[in-house]
Length: 337
Image 1: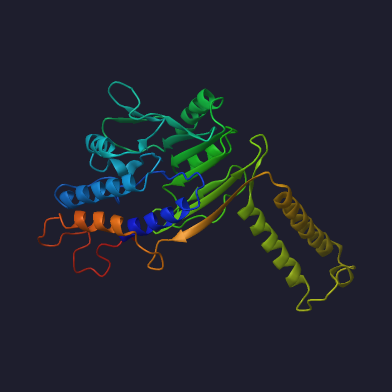
Image 2: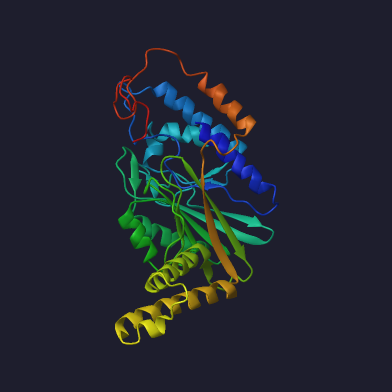
Protein backbone atom coordinates (compact mmCIF):
# COMPACT_ATOMS: atom_id res chain seq x y z
CA UNK A 1 0.00 0.00 0.00
CA UNK A 2 3.01 2.25 -0.44
CA UNK A 3 1.25 3.95 -3.34
CA UNK A 4 -0.88 5.89 -0.84
CA UNK A 5 2.15 7.61 0.65
CA UNK A 6 3.49 8.42 -2.82
CA UNK A 7 0.12 9.75 -3.94
CA UNK A 8 0.04 12.00 -0.86
CA UNK A 9 3.48 13.34 -1.76
CA UNK A 10 2.30 14.32 -5.27
CA UNK A 11 -0.84 15.96 -3.87
CA UNK A 12 1.18 17.90 -1.28
CA UNK A 13 3.49 19.20 -3.99
CA UNK A 14 0.48 20.56 -5.89
CA UNK A 15 -0.93 22.24 -2.80
CA UNK A 16 2.29 24.23 -2.46
CA UNK A 17 1.30 26.04 -5.70
CA UNK A 18 -1.71 27.59 -3.91
CA UNK A 19 -4.04 26.77 -6.80
CA UNK A 20 -7.50 25.33 -6.06
CA UNK A 21 -6.97 21.57 -5.82
CA UNK A 22 -9.65 18.90 -6.24
CA UNK A 23 -8.93 15.28 -5.24
CA UNK A 24 -11.55 12.75 -6.35
CA UNK A 25 -11.88 9.01 -7.00
CA UNK A 26 -14.31 7.26 -9.34
CA UNK A 27 -14.55 3.94 -7.53
CA UNK A 28 -13.17 0.46 -6.89
CA UNK A 29 -11.17 2.07 -4.13
CA UNK A 30 -11.27 -0.37 -1.22
CA UNK A 31 -11.10 -3.95 -2.53
CA UNK A 32 -9.56 -5.91 -5.42
CA UNK A 33 -12.70 -7.80 -6.40
CA UNK A 34 -16.48 -7.50 -6.12
CA UNK A 35 -17.07 -10.39 -3.71
CA UNK A 36 -14.98 -11.55 -0.77
CA UNK A 37 -15.50 -15.09 0.51
CA UNK A 38 -15.48 -15.43 4.29
CA UNK A 39 -14.03 -18.94 3.95
CA UNK A 40 -11.37 -18.31 1.30
CA UNK A 41 -10.38 -14.66 1.84
CA UNK A 42 -8.69 -12.93 4.74
CA UNK A 43 -11.64 -10.73 5.68
CA UNK A 44 -9.96 -9.15 8.69
CA UNK A 45 -7.00 -8.07 6.56
CA UNK A 46 -9.36 -6.67 3.91
CA UNK A 47 -11.18 -4.60 6.53
CA UNK A 48 -7.97 -3.24 8.00
CA UNK A 49 -6.68 -2.26 4.55
CA UNK A 50 -9.93 -0.49 3.68
CA UNK A 51 -9.74 1.50 6.92
CA UNK A 52 -6.14 2.41 6.12
CA UNK A 53 -7.32 3.80 2.78
CA UNK A 54 -10.04 5.87 4.51
CA UNK A 55 -7.59 7.27 7.06
CA UNK A 56 -5.04 8.14 4.38
CA UNK A 57 -7.64 9.76 2.11
CA UNK A 58 -8.94 11.79 5.06
CA UNK A 59 -5.40 13.04 5.58
CA UNK A 60 -5.09 13.89 1.88
CA UNK A 61 -8.32 15.95 2.06
CA UNK A 62 -10.22 14.07 -0.63
CA UNK A 63 -13.25 15.92 -2.02
CA UNK A 64 -15.49 13.18 -3.40
CA UNK A 65 -15.68 9.48 -4.20
CA UNK A 66 -18.24 7.42 -6.12
CA UNK A 67 -18.55 3.73 -5.18
CA UNK A 68 -18.08 0.98 -7.75
CA UNK A 69 -18.97 -2.71 -7.60
CA UNK A 70 -15.77 -3.70 -5.80
CA UNK A 71 -16.40 -1.24 -2.99
CA UNK A 72 -19.41 -3.38 -2.00
CA UNK A 73 -17.31 -6.55 -1.62
CA UNK A 74 -18.18 -6.76 2.08
CA UNK A 75 -21.72 -5.48 1.61
CA UNK A 76 -23.57 -2.19 1.89
CA UNK A 77 -23.52 -2.10 5.68
CA UNK A 78 -19.73 -2.24 5.78
CA UNK A 79 -19.37 0.40 3.07
CA UNK A 80 -21.70 2.65 5.06
CA UNK A 81 -19.42 2.14 8.05
CA UNK A 82 -16.46 3.30 5.97
CA UNK A 83 -18.51 6.30 4.82
CA UNK A 84 -19.16 7.26 8.46
CA UNK A 85 -15.39 7.27 9.06
CA UNK A 86 -14.65 9.37 5.96
CA UNK A 87 -14.21 13.13 5.82
CA UNK A 88 -14.95 13.13 2.07
CA UNK A 89 -18.29 12.78 0.26
CA UNK A 90 -19.63 9.50 -1.13
CA UNK A 91 -21.80 10.34 -4.15
CA UNK A 92 -23.83 8.28 -6.61
CA UNK A 93 -26.97 9.20 -8.52
CA UNK A 94 -28.05 5.71 -9.64
CA UNK A 95 -27.44 3.39 -6.66
CA UNK A 96 -30.63 2.78 -4.69
CA UNK A 97 -31.79 0.72 -1.72
CA UNK A 98 -33.62 -2.28 -3.18
CA UNK A 99 -36.20 -2.13 -0.40
CA UNK A 100 -37.26 1.50 0.06
CA UNK A 101 -36.07 2.68 -3.41
CA UNK A 102 -34.18 5.60 -1.89
CA UNK A 103 -30.73 6.65 -3.09
CA UNK A 104 -27.91 5.18 -1.05
CA UNK A 105 -25.78 8.32 -1.33
CA UNK A 106 -26.15 11.96 -2.29
CA UNK A 107 -26.30 12.11 -6.10
CA UNK A 108 -23.95 15.09 -6.40
CA UNK A 109 -21.85 17.63 -4.55
CA UNK A 110 -21.19 21.29 -5.37
CA UNK A 111 -18.17 23.15 -3.99
CA UNK A 112 -17.33 26.84 -4.20
CA UNK A 113 -13.81 27.89 -5.19
CA UNK A 114 -13.54 31.66 -4.85
CA UNK A 115 -16.96 32.15 -6.42
CA UNK A 116 -16.46 29.42 -9.04
CA UNK A 117 -18.80 26.47 -8.47
CA UNK A 118 -17.66 22.94 -9.32
CA UNK A 119 -20.15 20.05 -9.23
CA UNK A 120 -19.42 16.32 -9.05
CA UNK A 121 -22.00 13.73 -10.17
CA UNK A 122 -21.33 10.08 -9.30
CA UNK A 123 -22.64 7.00 -11.13
CA UNK A 124 -21.87 3.33 -11.79
CA UNK A 125 -22.69 0.72 -14.41
CA UNK A 126 -24.94 -2.18 -13.38
CA UNK A 127 -23.58 -4.92 -11.12
CA UNK A 128 -25.08 -7.73 -9.05
CA UNK A 129 -25.36 -7.15 -5.30
CA UNK A 130 -28.16 -8.18 -2.96
CA UNK A 131 -30.35 -5.35 -1.66
CA UNK A 132 -28.94 -2.79 -4.13
CA UNK A 133 -30.86 -1.47 -7.13
CA UNK A 134 -28.71 0.01 -9.89
CA UNK A 135 -30.69 2.16 -12.29
CA UNK A 136 -29.59 2.95 -15.85
CA UNK A 137 -26.72 5.42 -15.35
CA UNK A 138 -26.96 7.78 -18.35
CA UNK A 139 -30.58 8.79 -17.76
CA UNK A 140 -29.90 9.25 -14.03
CA UNK A 141 -26.87 11.44 -14.76
CA UNK A 142 -28.95 13.50 -17.20
CA UNK A 143 -31.70 14.01 -14.62
CA UNK A 144 -29.23 15.23 -11.99
CA UNK A 145 -27.38 17.42 -14.49
CA UNK A 146 -30.60 19.13 -15.54
CA UNK A 147 -31.31 19.83 -11.87
CA UNK A 148 -27.94 21.37 -11.02
CA UNK A 149 -26.63 22.82 -14.29
CA UNK A 150 -27.86 26.33 -13.47
CA UNK A 151 -26.07 26.20 -10.10
CA UNK A 152 -22.65 25.00 -11.31
CA UNK A 153 -20.00 26.56 -13.54
CA UNK A 154 -18.16 23.28 -14.16
CA UNK A 155 -19.54 19.73 -13.91
CA UNK A 156 -17.41 16.61 -13.42
CA UNK A 157 -18.87 13.11 -13.77
CA UNK A 158 -17.21 10.43 -11.62
CA UNK A 159 -18.14 7.23 -13.44
CA UNK A 160 -17.40 3.64 -12.49
CA UNK A 161 -18.53 2.24 -15.78
CA UNK A 162 -18.28 -0.24 -18.61
CA UNK A 163 -17.09 0.84 -22.03
CA UNK A 164 -20.57 0.55 -23.66
CA UNK A 165 -22.06 2.78 -20.94
CA UNK A 166 -19.10 5.12 -21.26
CA UNK A 167 -19.63 5.41 -25.02
CA UNK A 168 -23.33 6.13 -24.53
CA UNK A 169 -22.55 8.76 -21.93
CA UNK A 170 -20.12 10.59 -24.22
CA UNK A 171 -22.68 10.56 -27.05
CA UNK A 172 -25.58 11.60 -24.81
CA UNK A 173 -25.26 15.33 -25.42
CA UNK A 174 -25.45 16.05 -21.69
CA UNK A 175 -23.53 19.28 -21.12
CA UNK A 176 -21.05 18.20 -18.44
CA UNK A 177 -17.43 19.27 -18.83
CA UNK A 178 -15.25 16.32 -17.77
CA UNK A 179 -15.52 12.57 -17.13
CA UNK A 180 -13.22 10.72 -14.73
CA UNK A 181 -13.63 6.98 -15.09
CA UNK A 182 -12.60 3.81 -13.30
CA UNK A 183 -13.59 0.27 -14.11
CA UNK A 184 -11.83 0.25 -17.45
CA UNK A 185 -8.23 0.00 -18.61
CA UNK A 186 -5.48 -0.96 -16.17
CA UNK A 187 -3.39 1.90 -17.57
CA UNK A 188 -3.92 5.61 -17.14
CA UNK A 189 -5.11 7.62 -20.15
CA UNK A 190 -2.76 10.31 -21.43
CA UNK A 191 -5.27 12.61 -23.14
CA UNK A 192 -8.96 13.23 -22.86
CA UNK A 193 -9.87 12.03 -26.34
CA UNK A 194 -12.40 13.53 -28.73
CA UNK A 195 -15.58 15.09 -27.40
CA UNK A 196 -16.02 15.56 -23.67
CA UNK A 197 -12.57 15.02 -22.07
CA UNK A 198 -12.34 11.56 -20.48
CA UNK A 199 -9.51 10.45 -18.20
CA UNK A 200 -8.78 7.14 -16.52
CA UNK A 201 -6.20 6.61 -13.79
CA UNK A 202 -6.06 2.83 -14.26
CA UNK A 203 -7.50 0.16 -11.98
CA UNK A 204 -4.42 -1.02 -10.09
CA UNK A 205 -3.48 2.10 -8.15
CA UNK A 206 -0.17 2.42 -9.99
CA UNK A 207 -0.91 5.79 -11.56
CA UNK A 208 -2.31 9.16 -10.62
CA UNK A 209 -3.78 11.49 -13.22
CA UNK A 210 -2.74 15.06 -12.46
CA UNK A 211 -5.20 17.16 -14.46
CA UNK A 212 -4.62 20.88 -14.90
CA UNK A 213 -7.62 23.04 -15.84
CA UNK A 214 -7.28 26.75 -16.65
CA UNK A 215 -10.53 28.68 -17.02
CA UNK A 216 -10.81 32.32 -18.05
CA UNK A 217 -14.22 32.35 -19.80
CA UNK A 218 -16.84 29.84 -18.68
CA UNK A 219 -18.78 30.43 -21.92
CA UNK A 220 -15.89 29.25 -24.10
CA UNK A 221 -15.08 25.64 -25.04
CA UNK A 222 -12.65 23.59 -22.97
CA UNK A 223 -9.63 22.86 -25.19
CA UNK A 224 -7.81 19.55 -24.63
CA UNK A 225 -4.15 20.53 -25.03
CA UNK A 226 -2.82 16.96 -24.80
CA UNK A 227 -5.12 15.72 -27.54
CA UNK A 228 -4.20 18.57 -29.90
CA UNK A 229 -0.49 18.09 -29.25
CA UNK A 230 -0.90 14.40 -29.99
CA UNK A 231 -2.57 15.23 -33.32
CA UNK A 232 0.23 17.68 -34.19
CA UNK A 233 2.89 15.10 -33.37
CA UNK A 234 1.21 12.41 -35.49
CA UNK A 235 0.74 14.71 -38.49
CA UNK A 236 4.27 16.10 -38.28
CA UNK A 237 5.62 12.54 -38.16
CA UNK A 238 3.63 11.67 -41.27
CA UNK A 239 4.97 14.74 -43.11
CA UNK A 240 8.53 13.93 -42.05
CA UNK A 241 8.21 10.34 -43.27
CA UNK A 242 6.99 11.56 -46.66
CA UNK A 243 10.31 13.40 -47.11
CA UNK A 244 11.99 9.99 -47.40
CA UNK A 245 14.99 10.91 -45.28
CA UNK A 246 15.61 14.33 -46.86
CA UNK A 247 14.83 16.98 -44.17
CA UNK A 248 14.94 19.73 -46.83
CA UNK A 249 12.71 17.87 -49.27
CA UNK A 250 9.92 19.89 -50.92
CA UNK A 251 6.80 17.75 -50.61
CA UNK A 252 4.88 19.73 -53.22
CA UNK A 253 7.61 19.06 -55.77
CA UNK A 254 8.18 15.45 -54.70
CA UNK A 255 4.51 14.49 -55.09
CA UNK A 256 3.29 16.93 -57.76
CA UNK A 257 2.37 14.01 -60.01
CA UNK A 258 0.66 12.07 -57.19
CA UNK A 259 -2.44 14.09 -56.30
CA UNK A 260 -3.87 11.57 -53.80
CA UNK A 261 -0.67 11.59 -51.75
CA UNK A 262 -0.51 15.37 -52.00
CA UNK A 263 -4.12 15.63 -50.73
CA UNK A 264 -3.13 13.53 -47.70
CA UNK A 265 -0.10 15.77 -47.12
CA UNK A 266 -2.25 18.91 -47.27
CA UNK A 267 -4.75 17.33 -44.89
CA UNK A 268 -1.97 16.77 -42.31
CA UNK A 269 -0.75 20.33 -42.82
CA UNK A 270 -4.30 21.55 -42.10
CA UNK A 271 -4.41 19.45 -38.92
CA UNK A 272 -1.16 21.01 -37.68
CA UNK A 273 -2.32 24.55 -38.50
CA UNK A 274 -5.79 24.13 -36.99
CA UNK A 275 -4.47 22.44 -33.84
CA UNK A 276 -1.83 25.12 -33.24
CA UNK A 277 -4.46 27.81 -33.78
CA UNK A 278 -6.79 26.21 -31.20
CA UNK A 279 -3.95 26.00 -28.68
CA UNK A 280 -2.84 29.60 -29.25
CA UNK A 281 -6.40 31.00 -29.02
CA UNK A 282 -7.70 28.81 -26.21
CA UNK A 283 -9.37 30.59 -23.30
CA UNK A 284 -10.10 27.43 -21.29
CA UNK A 285 -7.62 24.57 -21.35
CA UNK A 286 -7.23 21.10 -19.90
CA UNK A 287 -4.06 19.04 -19.82
CA UNK A 288 -2.86 16.07 -17.84
CA UNK A 289 0.26 14.36 -16.62
CA UNK A 290 0.21 10.64 -15.89
CA UNK A 291 2.22 10.14 -12.70
CA UNK A 292 3.58 6.65 -12.02
CA UNK A 293 3.42 5.99 -8.28
CA UNK A 294 6.68 4.08 -8.24
CA UNK A 295 9.82 4.32 -6.12
CA UNK A 296 10.91 7.47 -7.98
CA UNK A 297 8.21 9.35 -6.04
CA UNK A 298 8.93 10.22 -2.41
CA UNK A 299 6.66 8.76 0.25
CA UNK A 300 4.93 11.18 2.63
CA UNK A 301 6.06 10.23 6.12
CA UNK A 302 2.79 10.65 8.05
CA UNK A 303 0.83 8.64 5.45
CA UNK A 304 3.48 5.93 5.53
CA UNK A 305 3.07 5.84 9.31
CA UNK A 306 -0.71 5.32 8.96
CA UNK A 307 -0.10 2.47 6.51
CA UNK A 308 2.57 0.78 8.65
CA UNK A 309 0.54 1.18 11.84
CA UNK A 310 -2.53 -0.30 10.17
CA UNK A 311 -0.73 -3.19 8.51
CA UNK A 312 0.79 -4.14 11.88
CA UNK A 313 -2.76 -4.87 13.12
CA UNK A 314 -3.29 -7.66 10.59
CA UNK A 315 -3.23 -10.93 12.57
CA UNK A 316 -0.24 -13.10 11.83
CA UNK A 317 -0.95 -16.65 10.85
CA UNK A 318 -0.61 -19.13 8.02
CA UNK A 319 -0.56 -17.31 4.71
CA UNK A 320 -3.82 -17.72 2.82
CA UNK A 321 -4.77 -17.90 -0.83
CA UNK A 322 -4.78 -14.47 -2.44
CA UNK A 323 -7.83 -12.72 -3.96
CA UNK A 324 -7.50 -14.82 -7.14
CA UNK A 325 -7.32 -18.09 -5.22
CA UNK A 326 -3.56 -18.56 -5.74
CA UNK A 327 -1.74 -20.47 -3.01
CA UNK A 328 1.19 -18.87 -1.09
CA UNK A 329 3.74 -20.79 -3.15
CA UNK A 330 2.41 -19.52 -6.47
CA UNK A 331 4.93 -17.19 -8.21
CA UNK A 332 2.24 -14.53 -8.66
CA UNK A 333 0.66 -14.84 -5.21
CA UNK A 334 -0.63 -11.46 -4.05
CA UNK A 335 -0.31 -9.84 -7.48
CA UNK A 336 -3.28 -8.12 -9.14
CA UNK A 337 -2.89 -9.78 -12.55
